[in-house]
Image 1 (cartoon, one colour):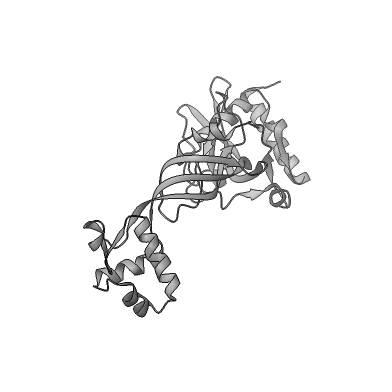
Image 2 (image 1 turned 135 degrees about the vertical axis):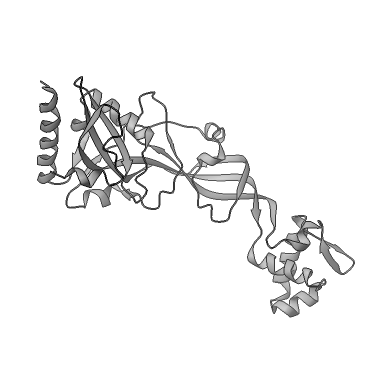
Amino acid sequence: MATNEKFIEQDYSNYYEGYQFVNGLDAYLPLVKMDLMMEYTCNAPIGTLESYMCTCIRQGITDRYGIIDVLDLDDHIVNDLIDKLIKMDIVKEEGNKLSFTKEEYKAAESIKSLQHKKQEVSWCYKGLMNADKKIDTHMKSIEQAKSIVQVVQQEKCFYLLPNVVIEVRPEELKAISPKMLYYPNQKQEEILEVKHLEILKERTALYEHYKILFYRGSEGDVKVLVHRADEEQKVDKAFTKTIQRLSNRSELFNQLRYTSPDCEKELAQLSKQISSMFNFK
């Protein structure tokens, strides 16, 4: 059986006042991922080549041929990029002279503009229904999440299968705040409005590593705490609420799945340990 220290590196031993920490369990808990095509408007930085064009204009190179000579790019590439900047209302052209449409662009190291985009994104929600029967949207990056194939290939592992399948229409997803949509936001886009969403394919179950901690109370009750198993060890209130509900109904151990006989023995020992403390029948 795992030692207590393994589960309380961040000292969750006294998390619940009046409750004593019993033991804990490593487990993979499910997310449900939906792939979507999203059309939206946003404020986003312009591209690298467009930024080069703006730098040239700031340095006094204000005609197309001068920019072509400096950047050593094909004529059509430079002309297309300049036309794009004009269409985005960042640059204007009077005669043969290029200039900025706003004074602020003259000194800006990077320029953001209103843009209309279409790209594939992913929306994730936790795959366990909470006590209020609400869907918990998962807003963190899922890059470290594992597929079920990766999970079951581990030599020793506990996991819970999803029990939430929601049917959603694109118009319903549009009503969700753009912040609820996961996508690689490395471009520092500020989404202003979601114009259209299209569901591309079936949902995919993914799994993240958590620790489930068990505590005993003086009145014979059990409390649980769920926190992430990464360096942050952040408490997950939504999963805690769900796992508590399963524990209260004595369903948790029945719903846990495992990948080896050793897991079965460990789970039986934990169940016996908790039950014996409260004289459970």
